[in-house]
Image (cartoon, rainbow, N blue to C red; front, side):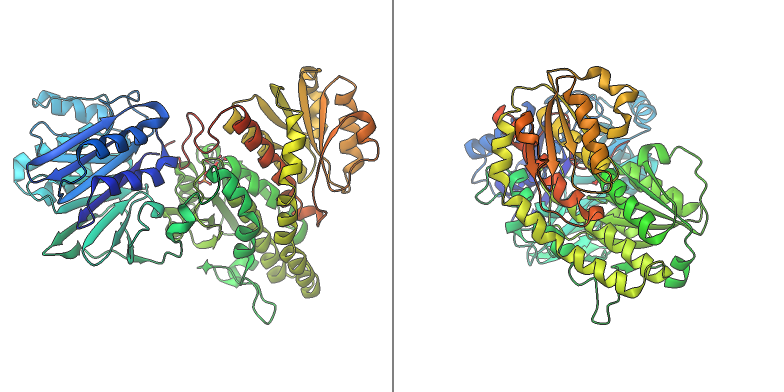
Length: 611
Ligand code: F6R
């Protein structure tokens, strides 16, 4: 939550900060602000205009600061945690003297005590935020030791919580002080400028080198005599994304672009995983094949869409590898006392690789001796650095808050993991593994065929626009698809929608079914096809509008007035990757038809770095 962007050197313009903030808007957008280091001091602007704060900041920049020469500048887009979204609470925050400016992403858990201590020392606070204590603490420590680096280090040591922080000092406006703890912060450089941001998309233009700020360390970045100096020099990051990938291109919004990009996201994720000898390779595996052979239990943790991808993979892992697979919401897992051992593999699924609950779940699993792996879309993300093994989804940056292409890519990556383990443990014959790999390699093309039906799916959705209650049902791998369909719809249309295992309907939810309800059934031909259709009969008999996701239209659907989303037929365990497409399209179409912004749903942020 919250996005940070800063620039020191030639490229430091207010416009460039606004552009960076736009690319970080997915991290939160209830207010925004910036500080500019001009030759007459700091100029600060904060705006809180609901979802248009960054646009308003851009108007302010165009109207006032266009030609001002800056030494440095930094901006912030906020997702409120402490203090309502307001101008006063928007970042950056300044100390009493106006010498230090701070932007911050995360939560300072001990801010109340620190605030009280500082107030007792005479500090005056201008906002309700936890962030403001950071800048006053730096001021206080500086007052005592007169050394900015020391002051920032001491202040950071006193803070408890997860956070990424950048501090500016008016007396050395060509320097940034940068720190992070369990929250992302990346640095980019070119010949004459230094950039810092919460995420790579905000850095892409012209950056030639990327660095990750190490956990719990202070990095000072300056531009002196046109040369960038980083102290100490952090580890470099390999980044394959380019600026065109974070541009909406000819699309009306990122979500429709990202839905369209799904075949590519999946094929890039699958590409190069099998060598000429037919052996599957994973990305960064610091667990030996011998250790992996001993794995007797797999636990998958994740949140939201990533959790659903894990739920899909459970079926393949249990079926192909014959090990028990537990699946749990990260925020619950981390507060349990789970039974883990060195023969347990805990897999965190996280697009961003930064979701706090999943990160803590993984670190606790690691501390209790289990092997850990992360499936992440972001190279060098916190979880990727922390886990014993990493499996990257190569979906490219996902900007829309609602995940689409990364869901499909996560499933693809986890299916690869299942086949890798099955090969290793010999629970499948090599020829079976090869056959399944070739079936998996056909899925991107099948997803492409589903995408070629988008107009059909939208036409079908027109019949649903007036409905205000949706229930999604499925069995086996269709169940997580039902959950994902319901999540997409509620996220971007705010329509009450629930996903259930189809067999659970009669144990309660069916009481809600009437002629105002839509029931979307995931009913691709599979071993449980007839059973799902029997559940459909039950809701039809109670007046529900029925929508069927099918790889073959049920014979009587037209006569009965059901709506049908047709998808290509593929291996049952892989079918969620095509079944989900019409549900994404449906949610998107309803959102746009109701005049909503599918990319920026209310109250949400893409990367959840708080509990
Ligand atoms: C839904 C969505 C969220 C995320 C969840 C986990 O469309 O995007 O539910 O899936 O917040 O985020 P990551 O995968 O970054 O850990």
